[in-house]
Length: 348
Ligand code: SR1
Image (cartoon, rainbow, N blue to C red; front, side, top):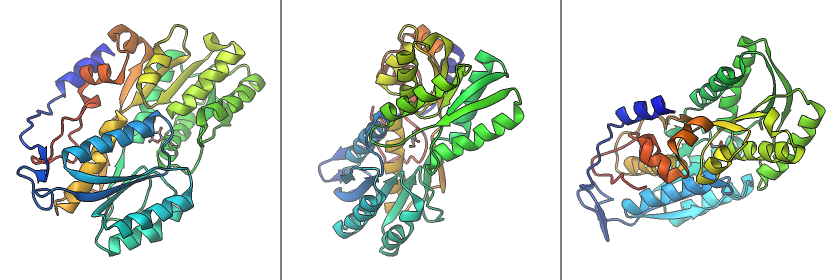
């Protein structure tokens, strides 16, 4: 963690000068329409429960406020039909841009095309809309999974029995799964004994029930790859109920203040996570929308790079909250993805 912190600090060269501020009626020095303010943008989510999605939304709201954007938030209910309906509502509201946060591509294609046909800019976070006009934001999920699995090998060697938590159909989980599949092929000594998972409004508790059954049936499992923090919480709950926390190590994704507490508490089996600050990712998504609305270029693939956070590293650094993490690792307070001199950026 120390070397990571050092590396992150030296790479911190994201100088910040707040020369452009949102004022009532627009951003000083911004191009149209942001010079006048009140640009309507919609954030349409598929999932809104859980720390990651709440922090993502908070980051989007903070960046929108700094740009004097009138952000309309449509909360997700893991309901594809509702998400389609919300995109149509956003179109009818006359928004200039729509940020789509997760979702099922097969149910979004035609409504997203309707938005594009009306000249509305679209940004996709973690849902593959496969359209060259739509910038795709992601957290470099391949690198995220690789960092977590490399740490698992560092801690446990290259021969162990594993449990794996996965639900197909979610772009970030599918990308992380590609790495897991390759990893197993390259490490014959690593055997996947059980696979389970659930994404719902009760992901952690439902995953806990599944994990209990899997761990009871496979008492030789020593490592769990659970690349979503709600999955890791579920497995940790199960391990605690079964009284096997000292026999299990959990490697995960994502971070929040609650996660840091769960990782660093005495005896926790959750030993590493690989994460971005979801608020930063939310802010990046809004900036991608704003740049497009201002007629400026946005890359097709926008990546916010994750950082490995180990239990040992967090404990040694005395980090207890996401705010403390942001103070120590600059990548957790800002990103240099899709910036412009007129966009205020210091938000968290
Ligand atoms: C159900 S998908 C969950 C993931 O989406 C975001 O990419 C977060 O990293 C989370 O792990």
